[in-house]
Image (cartoon, rainbow, N blue to C red; front, side, top):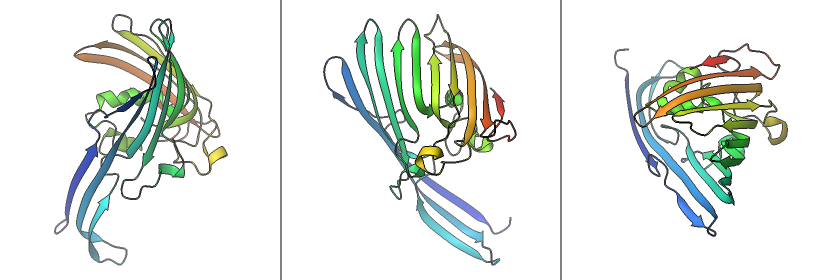
Length: 241
């Protein structure tokens, strides 16, 4: 390791650590919010080995040092009697190139939901899997320097054709369940984003006890391969958190 140095400087412009929303009121019962974050960095590497056995110095602008840049649109409409309709569109892109992740629109999320204070929320469409609740326990927020890198993002995939239920909070207790049918994005929209998206059926459950200063949660989920097997630790496996 003598003579090798690694220096990385990361600059992230996120529209707030929580996201900054530009909300456009349509009327008293509907609203749409445009939100997002812009992530960029400067990376300097010295004495990097090449295939020819020599070394090089690399100084470059990169767009994914912390995590992907995001552009999103979300909205809700009050349907009365404590019920509202919601929609969510979320797109990742590289800040250094402006290219959409995966070459398609809204690959990070495109779903519709009905939410009621008494019976909870039902969501259908493409979006985060049930294990996205791990986000709240990771000090690096499941981004590129987080625990997620050790599992090839197994604990935070975005899966298509999903049905998800989230309960209301009952004096601190809540639960949720999700199933994804297994049809893959590449069947209708070109190449899949990565191996995790090319899955078979997936399902998961979670339960939690939440208080203002702490949260206790358990999650169990299963993601199968396109052949219906559990045969790869990072893409087709069982997970308990």
